[in-house]
Image (cartoon, rainbow, N blue to C red; front, top):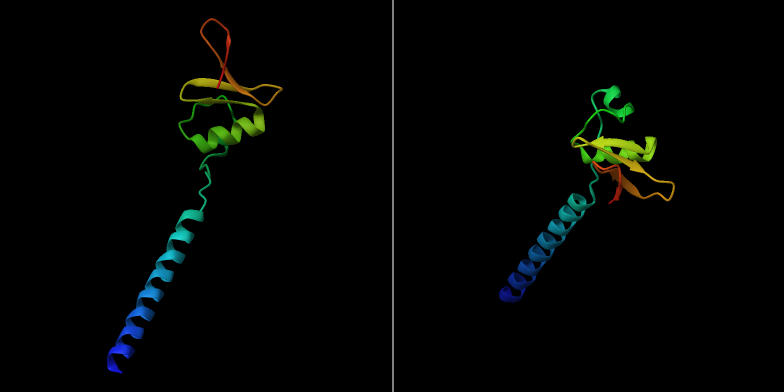
Length: 93
């Protein structure tokens, strides 16, 4: 009888531990991070160079152009992203 009680107790503790870990990982994986700039000028000027990918995507959506890592990217009328090569050719990403 004591062995059965001990076995049920161990199973209950194990199940509680596993479900508790599962909830922790679900919260951790679904957490979203959004870029919040300290300076509005950086957010509102697509000609300022940035290294932040989230800010770059935001500026492409809003202004249809953004400078990222020293290269200016544009959004075409077909919603394709491109940049201009040194020869002036459009290079689509």
